View 1 (spheres, each protein chain N blue to C red):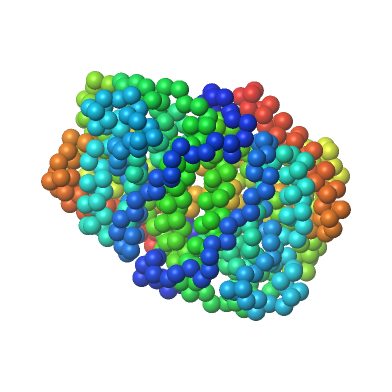
View 2 (spheres, chains in turn blue, green):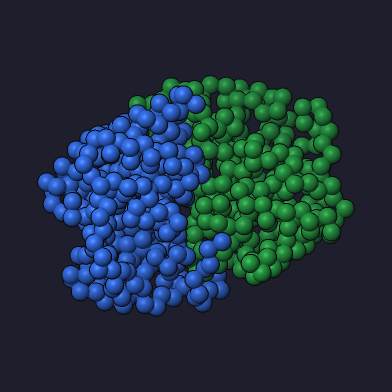
Length: 272
Length: 272
């Protein structure tokens, strides 16, 4: 079992009032008939005024530590091409990282890569609770609603989360361009990887630049795995989607890859 | 993968409006400091007027097919004795069974044990969606909120669901009196079973009268397992909790059993 972070537990979880009104997830293309639900937890670098600037420079607040640059543009491109609903988070992951449980250090990180986050250096239990209520709970309910409503009408949605990663991490360049990461069930991720090898020239790798063992598959683990839904987390190196045109070109490639991956798992399901 | 039920899928999940306002779960003893979250999915046999009487007689609507008789009284007794928060569902499981995913046949059963449920014989996709939105989604969000808020302040809650079962099923008497069922992780269930054998004279059995393989651990699978929380589903034969006094006496016994089980898993956690 994961160890809880050391912090002074409040007497009861009800005491403190939330810092701010809830920040609802944004849902686009809500009526789309496609089988995929696209999820973008790190779409925004917005830090609501209640949290000031978290003690960061403007350059830091624009960097990958605050969000996944290019991920929202790519997600929107995929949403259009795949006729897929898209849900994305409205605030920076430095306020609350929606791909982390509330007790994970990365949910409200005190340090990200080589950067200290002064506004997160000391977070009281009341403040952890307030951020959880303001960001994580509405996010989780919003995504769960999309999933459960589709299940109710006899669809079995497929959950695909869209992320980007920095080309240079802790001073070392990363060679991988496209990572496909899975939670418990690997079949969709493997089908997407095979499709990427067939259809693109991208340096595509499974469970890279990190994997479920690094606790990065929270959304998949909580929302997809318990319902037995096919799922994958896509990671695109952010220098490849740094402009609107580049993100569009990548959406062209990855829409074809995702479609081929979907066809493959539907073939497998029929054969089994 | 579980097969989806055969039904005509609506074009989009957004089309139909819910039949009724949402039926919010009831939360009691909300500020309780105890580590356990008590969950009672089948607390009520209430059928809201939108669903009439589902074509059932009054006797059928009072029977175990509509709810778990005695489970709420026992849950309240445990909530007081363990200083534990309690969440329970406000409508009959014949409208929506909160311990089932929206695509499970048992979520809105057409038949339960030997009884046909006329009002559930044919359920359109729109109606499945409406019941999911009215009952399952607020239930799931309510329970997830209790869990995530505790996790946020550094607690690791323990999820215990409280059920009762009928002494005679399909004409056959059941010998088991107290069943302890687990989802993926068995350690809490085993500790509770051992405590029941030590502290009570109950005929107590593991994964009886049914088990996770029968798809009865939906709540645990969706809400507890993904967060790595200790969990167990308790099943009490309903003839043993048929009166308020009997439920109280059972709460005395099971509160001691749960406390001993908790101490045991905390000992194991420290030793590991």
